[in-house]
Image 1: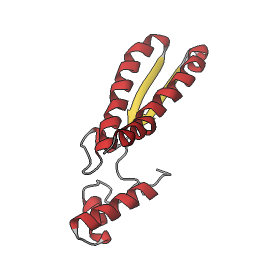
Image 2 (image 1 turned 135 degrees about the horizontal axis):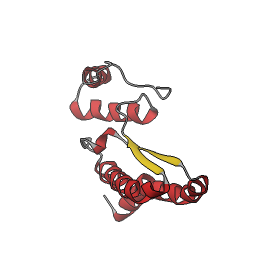
Image 3 (image 1 turned 120 degrees about the vertical axis):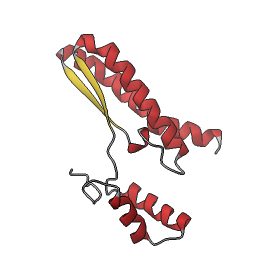
Length: 128
């Protein structure tokens, strides 16, 4: 991957969180109470094959969250990271297709393997 690939991933997967938090914290400070909820990926627990850029910067979100949780707690601002599993989105559908091609198995087999590892035995939905 090129430096440009890394820079783009940094902008999209980490710096976007930094910018949003930077813009939001002064408003939360004025309210004297608030929550920052960062939505990351299950890759913060276990890296996902073939997603080195995302895996790298999603862990940066964890570091950012832990640091800000400590620094902002005295201002009554709580900071959390949520790491949803497989949610039925266009991105997950694309990743399933890539996995299907890489492993030489059907798309249905990929989904069945993934769903077998999920306690509810199904992908989540954005509404969940």
